[in-house]
Structures are given as C-alpha cells and as structure tokens.
Amino acid sequence: METKKIHVLDRDFELSIREEEIMEKIKKVAAQLNTDYAGRQPVMVCILNGAFMFAADLVRYLDFQPEIIFARFSSYDGMDTTGEVRELLGITADVVGRDIIIVEDIVDTGITMSNILPNFQQMGASSVKVACLLQKPDKLKVDIKIDYCALQIPNDFIVGYGLDYDGFGRNYRDIYKVV
Ligand code: 5GP
Ligand code: MG
Image 1: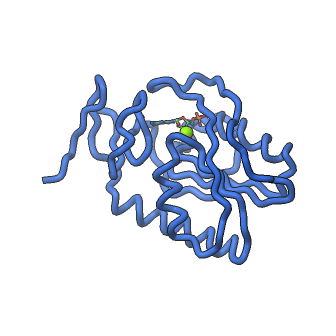
Image 2: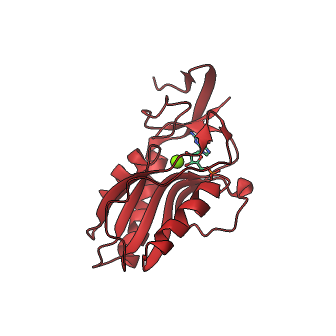
C-alpha cells in the first residue's frame, strides 16, 4: 500500500504529485533544453538545498554536456518566506561569456530568483535562463521570466522530492502538500 499521508515535524501532509507525473514533466523540460542547447556547454547551477533531486534527474536526460555546479542562496524559514535573501555562494565556474541555466526547486514570490539573476549578469554571463521544477504563479510578486518549468501548482506549502519543512521531508519521491 502506498503512503498517502506523511507527518513531518509537527505537520501532516497529503500526497499531491506522484513520482510518475514529476518524472514525465521533467523529461519534457529536458527535451526543451536538448533542443535549445544542442551542441553547447552551458553552466547549470543547481541551487541548494532544494533543487538537488530535480537537478539529479534532469541532467540524466540531457543529450548535451553541461558543466554542473552547486550554489546556495537561502530565503526561507519554516513555512513563511522571510523576504530577505542572502548572498549567493559557490559559483566556482568561470561564467564570463557562458550560457547559464539556473536550476531551482520552486519559484514562489520570485524574490529569490530576482536576486540570483543579476549576479550572473554582473559576472559577465552571455545568457541566463531559469529552469524550475515548480512554480506558484498566483504568488509571483516580481517581474521575472521563468524559461523552463516542469509543473505549476496552487499556493499550498509542499514537501518531498528535495523540498523540505525545516530540513525534513526532502527524501520522498512524491510531492506532498500541507493539510
Ligand atoms: P521565493 O523567493 O520565490 O518566494 O521563494 C523561493 C524559495 O522558497 C524556494 O527556492 C524554496 O526553497 C522556498 N519555497 C517556496 N515555496 C515553498 C514550498 O511550498 N515548500 C518548500 N519546501 N519550500 C518552498
Ligand atoms: Mg530553493
């Protein structure tokens, strides 16, 4: 029997998006990237911690050869966005003149992404695109372009498939929403 409900710290979550659907949508994003980046070597920046699982699955469906790096930029505390964004750490690749693909777990208000994007432009990247697993379109507060998005979801707080509630719940294959 499949687990339909999980408990993470002090909250209950129910199944929202199954592994099969997540993988199907990720393959579609990979197909778009394969068309757009054929024969190129972009730098894919996996934004830790939440995007680790998405990035791991996404890159395995790519036909081109990206340089893959990991960076951290956190803005979330529990279930509420703090609105405050900290420094982007860990950009080890030379990004001057390179095509950048930012790989993010979820775009909520878009504030985090709107802070990440200018960093790459200032560092001299020739193009900067965003690939996210999930987006909550109704919560977008800033004017940013999401170039590739696997799934659009309502405003519920979700965990699983890399996404956490105070550090826990990342390990699940499916995505769960708070009850
Ligand atoms: P934004 O700056 O777009 O409001 O927030 C983006 C970040 O907030 C994401 O990278 C993610 O870490 C976190 N976040 C937003 N919504 C959720 C959610 O429903 N669940 C979890 N676990 N994290 C979220
Ligand atoms: Mg994140």
